[in-house]
Image (tube, rainbow, N blue to C red):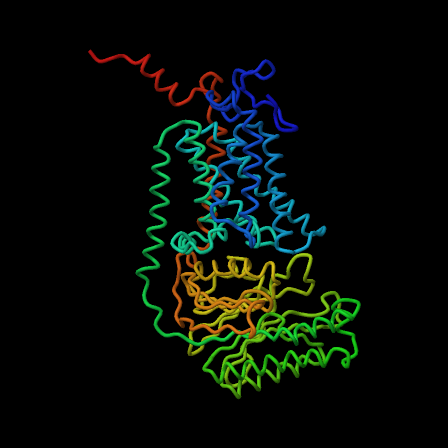
Length: 547
C-alpha cells in the first residue's frame, strides 16, 4: 500500500520496515484495529478534510456543516500519520484554505496577504500537533479535551498577536444564523464556538478509535445544554422596549462612480490626491457630499433621529476638511438629529498622507467625538492608527458608541458598555456580506445593538441577540439607504464582565495537559496499543471470580 507523498508508516504500524519499539509513546501508535487500513485511508482523509475546510473559512461561500466535518477528518489524518509528516500536511491544508479565502473574497494575493496566510496557517496547525503529541499519553476521558482547548486558545492568540483579528481564523462566523448556538459567545466570546466544533471532532475520533458511546453521550449533553440555553435566552429575554429610528445612508452609485473615476486619473496614490489641484477633484467630491446631505435631510424628515454615513463617505483634501465638517454640523442642527459621518482626509504629510475618521455630531451641531480608525487593514491602509479607545456618548436614545469597519474584528476592543454600536464601513461586493456577518457577533458578545452601514457592501442592523432588524444590499437597491428601529437599551453580558477568561482557561488547560503527559511514565508498546475491548477481555481473563 502507498503512503501520501513524503510520509512514512506511523510508528507502531505492522510492517517489515516499521515495528513498534519498546518504550514508544502512546501518541505514536494508532489503535491495533486501524493499522492495516491507515496508509490507504490517510490520503482520502486529507483530501476530503481540506476540501471541506475551503467552505468553512469565513467567506461568502461558507457552509455551516463543513466547519463541523473538516476537523473530524483532518484530526483522524494526523492521528494516523507520523508527527512531523502529519503536521506538515495540515499546515499545507490550512495555507490552501487561507489562499482560497483570499481569492474568494477578492482581497488580492500579495506578499503581505501571503505571509499572513502562512502565519495564520501555522497557528491553526498547532492544535492538531498538540493533539497528536498528547492524546496517546493521556487517559481517553482527559485526552478528549486537548484538541478543543488548543483550538479555542489558538483562535484567541490570533486576535492578540496578529493584525488580522477575527477576519480570518474564527470558526464562530461559519455558524452565522444559528442564533441559539451563537448565544454561547455572550459568555465565552467567539472562542466558545471553536471549542464546541473541535470538541465534536475529538469526540468522534475517540469513538472511531474505541467504539463506546459514553463520550458521545457526554458531548451530546453539552451541546444540547448550550443550544437549549441559547434558545431560552432568545425566547425569554425581555421585550426590547423603546426603539429609535436609525437611517444609514450611502452616496448614490452615480456620484460614487464619478468620484472613483476622477481619483483614478491621479497618480501617486493618497499623496497625489492630496497635492492635486482642487479644481480637478473638488467638483466630484462636492457632488458626493451634497448627495449625502440630501439623503440625510430626507431621512430626518421621515422620522430618523440618528443618521449614519459609511466609512470614508466624504473624501476631501485637508484644505477642504473643515468646510465638509461645517456643512454636516449645519445639517445636523437644522434637522435636529445625531449625525455620524465618515471622513477620509487626504493630507500631504508623510507617511500616512491622510486619516480615516468617524465624527459624531449632536442635534445642536456640536462635535461629540472625532474617532480615528484603530486597525488599518494590513497591507492596504497606511494611515496612522488611532488609540483604540472606543468613544461613548450618553443620548436620549441610550449610550451610543462608534468604531470603524475593521475595528469590529477585534473582540477585546469591542467590549464596551453601550446600548447602540455604530460601525461605519467600506467593503466591496465579494466581501461586504461576510464582513457584516462577522460584525454581528460583536452585538451578541457585547449586549448592544449594532448598526453597520457599508459604503459598498451589505448594511445591516442587529439587536443585542444577533437578530436582523434591517438589511440593504448596496448593489441590488436603487436607493442606498437602510432604515431600522433599534432598541435603545442594551444588556450587560457575562463576556463583557469576565472578558477572555474562557480563552485563557483553554490555554491554561493545554499547558496542564502537556505537563500531565510529560510526567506520566512511558508504557510498553504492547500495553499502549491495546484497545478498550482488548483491555476488557484481558481484565475478564485475569480476574478472580467470587466464590
